Amino acid sequence: MDGNGRWATARGWPRLVGHRKGAERVKQIVRAAPDLGIRWLTIYAFSTENWKRSTEEVLGLMTLFARYIEREADRLSAEGVRMRFIGDRSRLDAKLQRLMAGIEARTAANTRLNLTVAINYGGRNELARAMRVLAERAARGELDPAALDEGMVDATLDTADIPDPDLVIRTSGETRVSNFLLWQAAYAEYEFTPTLWPDFSPAELAAILERFDGRERRFGGVRGA
Image (cartoon, rainbow, N blue to C red; front, top):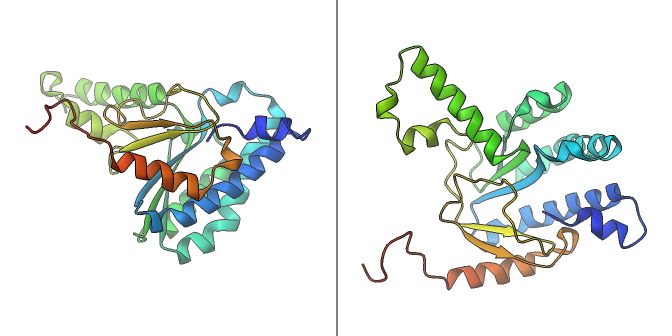
């Protein structure tokens, strides 16, 4: 969801104003997703590299995350949205961790839309944490290294019970994957749009989905096989 800061700067406003506008856009996209046939939606909110930003911006983002959870809990629950988080929570504020765990528990039975929010997430960090778990299991004699396969890796990732993405969309004109779902998106389709996230509308999402429906996905196979 790139472009919040640039959206605000272009208008002469602080970057955090752009992040607040971006949060409003998240609400609209989440509300529109089920009617567009989306049942699983993952949004990249804060990467492991975003700690490099100014202290003011990082603290503002963390406050925005907490406020979103507190203000949206009732609506998400009422609208059948299940909310989950992926990423390394250990560096996050204790209050934010409690809020995250609370809304996960509260919405666990919902099925209309599965919303996953990546906070302090990085694909390489996720893989390193998973490899550490598997190595510890092997050291305890619980796992034969020779038996290690892709399924075991899948089961150890943050996304163990979440399907791999079919489509990854990046806004704001950036054309790189930036450490997002590196393992899971191996066969995802990609869409890059110049639209800044605060301007990314449900209508544009619908147009991207229509183009996606026309793509032929062979997953390494041969057409017609």
